[in-house]
Length: 401
Image 1 (tube, rainbow, N blue to C red):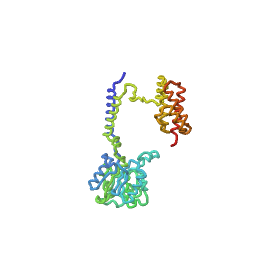
Image 2 (image 1 turned 90 degrees about the vertical axis):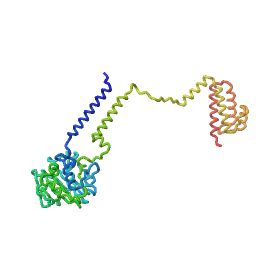
Image 3 (image 1 turned 30 degrees about the vertical axis):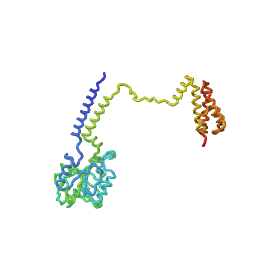
Image 4 (image 1 turned 120 degrees about the vertical axis):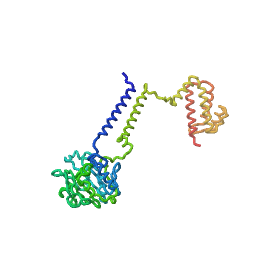
């Protein structure tokens, strides 16, 4: 039984609509945004930190949808819980930016289970580790989890910090110039390091700057001790590239990632399907133009057959006589008004007219062609006369002036 095309189209439309509805539902109930993302309002996000710094008068921006290249206008860069491993070029650019005087703040928790070689090959498997390694820093596990940490030395005084809720499972290890800020000086959960003219601050916790943890204890005060005053801070930038927003928002990106782009793709698919169903052929394709050209040999054979059937050997001889007379007139000045006998006598007196061609031969041939034009001759004789005429004409045309 043949299924109507309209029914097929309706089923396809319903299938696509169901898929779109399922996609929209999955987007609404999709995965949680990355930890410490500056536009995430989830408990582990950092939107509260972003808005709070804006309210304090800082000029806050996001580094996203472009190449990872902090410029000189950016004085403070926050890389919080990166989810993707930075490339080597980006790490080199970041280190050069710090050496020129930039302030880099890194916060994130080390994985509770050591990464296997396979996990390190996965995107983001060792993002934080790669970031710290470029500054000769590392996170190492604590013997026991640490919920709160006190200042290691009296450096966190503006504003004063007495206790920070860190919920850390690791401490920071680094070179001899590492300055501890929180926890045991031998196992600090927050530390700083001078690199050239700039500084790097590291916090071994993803909780302190999160929406949930920012208001606890003196967590917010810890960050203010590392930041310059708003008037001198320049641009304070949150990195979002290593949270996954490094692609430029091109047309292809929007068509694949945005809901209205999906709607356009669905509509185009429906139009294509409609045209496909409506444009079915009723039979085999028939070419609109048929090539009717013929080769030149077909015309020659056809004309020869007509002349043979009509007994026009005399007409052919007359044609060759006219061609020969025209060539002789052009080559040696034969008077076209002379009769066949007079023309033959004149050619015999002229002598050789071209290489290998004697004048008496040309005159004799011209006289014979003229006599054959008035009666029927055999095909063999006609072929011989045509061949001699062709030879003499070619010899005349090849003569040098």
